[in-house]
Amino acid sequence: MTRMPVVFAALLLSTALPTTGHSATNIPSLDEAAGRYAVTPSSDIDFAIDQIGGGGIRGKFGTFSGTFDLKPGDLAHSMVNFTLKPASVSTGQGRIDAFLRSAAVFDAADYNVISFKSDRVVQTGPETARVSGILTAKGRSNPESFDVKLANWNGKAIGFDVTGKILRSHYAMDVGEPIYSNVVQFNMMIEGRRA
Image (cartoon, rainbow, N blue to C red; front, side):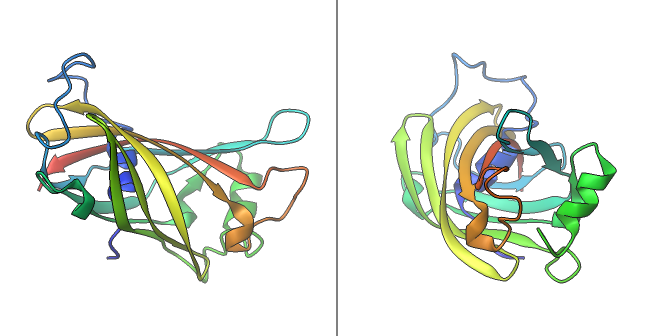
């Protein structure tokens, strides 16, 4: 399993974390929530690609796994290990799902894993951070960054809201440009439980 940045893990965690425990007005600092967590299957990884004139493609990935390690007092050295299966993409439209899995986009038959490995975490506030690292998809690796916000924490489970934008052209997936935007917008809710 490849290692991925804390931001991506945080993004995954924030998608499905229960709202029990701390409320949005009583969230601990990232230092208080330090520890090793496993990403839960109830997390959500949602994406959107805009289209000229409105509409576009909205979808999610259903198969993923990973861990993240929040270092107390040393967030910069926190690590995330995350992978997802592009074949698990779902838009609710079978024809579009098949096209996204094809060689024109993900080429899921030849490249069955997308991974992210963190190399830098910068805390931007008491509950926020920017995670940077290397995203590998379709045999290409590029630096990417995600913004993460601590959303929930109850001592055993943690949740993050993760957002970011990736250019499809960096991964040879820019078919349909310029009608479809080159920018893929990620809005993730990542849940993790102490490992």
